[in-house]
Figure 1 (cartoon, rainbow, N blue to C red):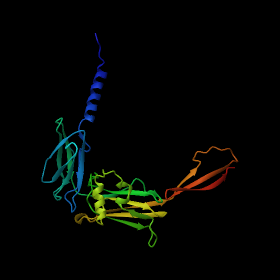
Figure 2: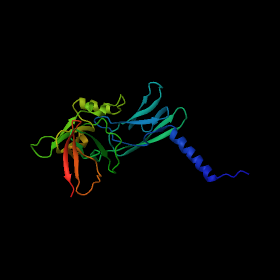
Figure 3: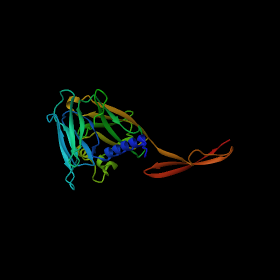
Figure 4: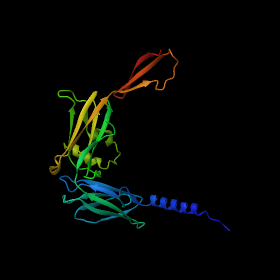
Length: 280
């Protein structure tokens, strides 16, 4: 008689089911938060993978869905979502991605609400001299949920020296001249943001470069008639990019003379000077 280890058997079945669900068709997001119809349209690209999708949605009066097709396979793997109704309170609807090959239908919830506040986000409040920092605006609803996209909205960005009359320590770098534009033709929403800058306006994305040592305030203001009070600011510090050689930890005997090299990187070129320390 063959004895089965049912715990191992069911674990194997579960792993197989999970693997199947992961490898099958799916979409990147199943919960999306969008603003209502604004002066400028705000779009969100809902990306699907491992499938050829047919898109449908509820409430055509508040949401527009535009499929995007792959030129080689003539399949749709993504769709552009846009709210098309003015704000009359929080709304909820759904988008369905049906895979034409397997028949699997994926449901994505879409919420439409108004901004409660905006905030500048950056990975660090410090950057190196000659270094770049990418700042991005995020918006929140009254429950502190983050909006999925602000692409298409117009903003006013300002660089404000810490004290009146002082020189700028930061300079704006156009998106088209930044490393972000080196995307090999797969720029996604960046094309829309670059077009806004090229027209003399700013988007939710802003790149700055450290040109002087010190602090500077960066402020942003939303250009939307009904939400003109939305703004935020952040203080960034620009410092020299320095390092010591040999790196720590350094093990020496008492009374030894240790010679360090202080390296400063300016314009991408390391520059060094020697420092000596006597350890008594």
